[in-house]
Amino acid sequence: MSVHLGIDLGTQSVRAMAVDGTGRVLGAASRPLTSRRDGPRHEQDPEEWWHALAGATREALDGVTGPVAGLAVDATSGTLLLTDGAGAPVTPALMYDDRRAASFADRVNEAGSAVWERLGYRRMQPNWALPKLLWLLESQPAGGFLAHQSDFVNRRLTGGPVATDLSNALKTGVDLIEERWPYEVLDELGVPAGMLPEVVRPGTRIGTVCAEAAHVTGIPEGTPVIAGTTDGCAAQLGAGALTPGSWNSVLGTTLVLKGVTRDLIHDPLGVVYSHRAPDGSWLPGGASSTGAGVLARDLPGRDLDALGEQAQARYDGRGGPPITYPLVSRGERFPFAAAGAEGFTLGEPADDVDRYAAILLGAAFVERLCFDYLDLLGAPVDGEIILTGGATRSAYWNRLRADVLGRPVTLRENAEPALGMAVLAAGARAGGMVRTRAVIEPSGADHREPYLRFVAELENRGWLPSQAAAHARERSAR
Image (cartoon, rainbow, N blue to C red):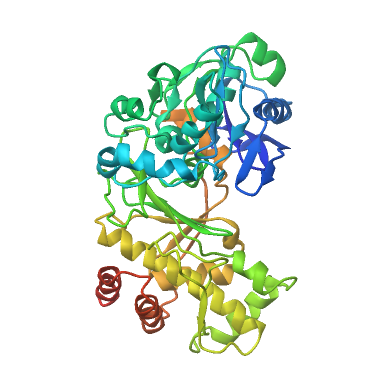
């Protein structure tokens, strides 16, 4: 049976996973990465990516038999560097959250406002790749060639220039509708057309593994290299959210929703933006600042499994806990944008069980509000809802989220970004690679009254727009 290799270039590690056509993991390995952080600065050494990748792939493929039918690489969204003509780095890599280019954001948005509006996200954020590219060009007068994180390692794998994928190029300003660079905007910003790579859809074959890379990585020479995606889109592919109307809700430190639509979604608030799928459909999504990170802050050292069991016994069918809006720090990004938003609790928790249950309920309400807002924008939300992320370890939380959504939710056996890249590398042969662990049906518990109280509080504080609040009320009444 053929083997498909997925490679995930994360912030803290590189992970490689060899998977067969049934989704069975034949081998997996990771290697750590280091960062340099100082205030707004966040850099990594691109050469470390390559050495870590080589170590991870050699270990993941050790003992694996059968031909490697293809590989794909995902990377952190908005990470980039400049290289010379041979692909060697001439700058450090500016990571996705490096904020040194903030002063270039207004210039970028003034030049590209018409394009960004047409693409549905309206404005680029200061940490997106295009402002950082301008910063690099100003600090590196000799210039160079643009490379996203995945482009750099793909060039090492193939031994020559490679196209970049539309997903990783989104934050560098690529026109996802016309599937090309907006040269007129980039020319106005002083970005030479000659420094830009060709762009292709994720899933496109961009080369094969060369002899030198095969020797270093253990990947057979001639293995097809497939254009990958960002890490968030890779996780969505790994979760199996692949058809219009299906959504992957990732709840870990923060909450991220990513789905599939046939048409591009336009968001007047700019909190939802879309990637392009391999088949030409759209992958809208948004990232909230709420999530399970509040548990570590407010309940440090506590046995969360034990608190979950106690919360289940206390509240199952017997009313509800207080409600906490679980913001780790000031500011919200989705389902509304509010720089001044702060966490709050409605009601008075009596003890740590109450505090725990209140955080879980508030996160579930934010998730519900995200779906209500997506419905307001016209996005289909009637398909499968797949839960992934660290929060799925809590049986109590899984059931609570199903109850608040009023929908069955699906849990996967494996939804790692590296699996998503193996799925992408498999292409048309990927049908059976995503495995379901369980489907959680709602118990019938009614959370509408406390949910609407929570929505009203967000609206009264001036954070949630009235139109979004009204739609949440209308949808709850259906």
